[in-house]
Amino acid sequence: MRSVSLPFRLRLPIVAAPMFLVSGPALVIAAARAGVIGCFPTPNARPIATLEAWMDEISGTLADAAKAQPRAVIGPWCANLITHSSNARLPDDLALVAKYKPPMLVTALGSPKPAIAVARSYGGLVFADVINLTLARKAVEAGVDGLVLVSAGAGGHTGHLSPFAFLSAVRRFFDGPVILGGGISDGAGVAGAIAAGADLVYMGTRFIVADESLADPAYKDMVAQASADDIIASAGITGTTANWLKASLIANGYDPANMPAAPGRDYDTGTAGTKRWATIWSAGQGVGAISAKEPAATIVDRLEREYLMAMTRVADLAADLRV
Image 1 (cartoon, rainbow, N blue to C red):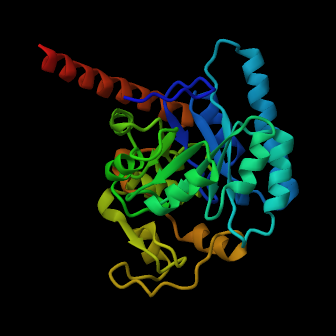
Image 2: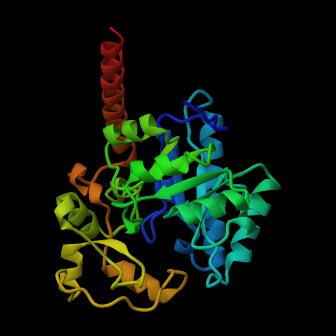
Image 3: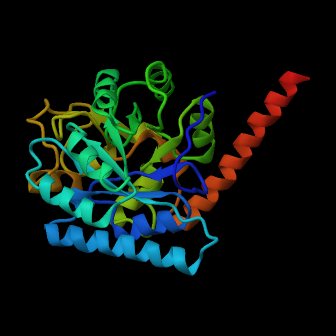
């Protein structure tokens, strides 16, 4: 099977995925210091001076940690950029990217080309967030380094394809690094994705409950108490299909069994989207693997144990087949 070499060391092949109003400097730093990739969406930091402060804090803290612990596995940080035309701040975001040089960028909802031009100037990697094969092919044609396959079951604005079917189809035309996301919340799921041909796994919902996340404490409690049956996919909130916590919809006056027709699309680059995500909460179908609020480092410790157990099981089964 093909193998991709990424230019950084990781403890586990996991990206703590960027989550609107949830991922901030503390979570990015904690994830990276635990040995995985920490990522945040730049729209979380408003105004632009806040984004610069965040990037300065993240890059400086991780650089200091690497110097203080040269043998430690410290993951890279990643900025998630909205490249849709509705994001009037994109040029300012890209100027800060050029200044602080995040090792990874993930683009969403638009062409990755503006980000590619900036990342190439300092050797950063650009991944495009895609939800179908058409978008995946367009991103490859644009020259991205890698793809993020957002599949069915993902929190936030979700995809519609099965993770394994999506990955298999993409591997027919793309041999570069792939991040797979969609309902993966434990180490066994990570092992399955890697065995199927992914290079990294997007894991957002699992980190909502992290002590370092920006999520409301009540949001964290709701995620910890939920199961997959408590998630509903609807375009009735933002105009684009997203996975929502039923209890959150009910608390905001919605009937999960009778959701409204889709409103105009809101790509969450301004205050309108903020209001929707601030009190109506999203989560992926992997919520059942979560039972408590805890530090990001503890989450990664558990994921590592689960991952190693799953990989050992796969190796044992493979050995039995060779007998």
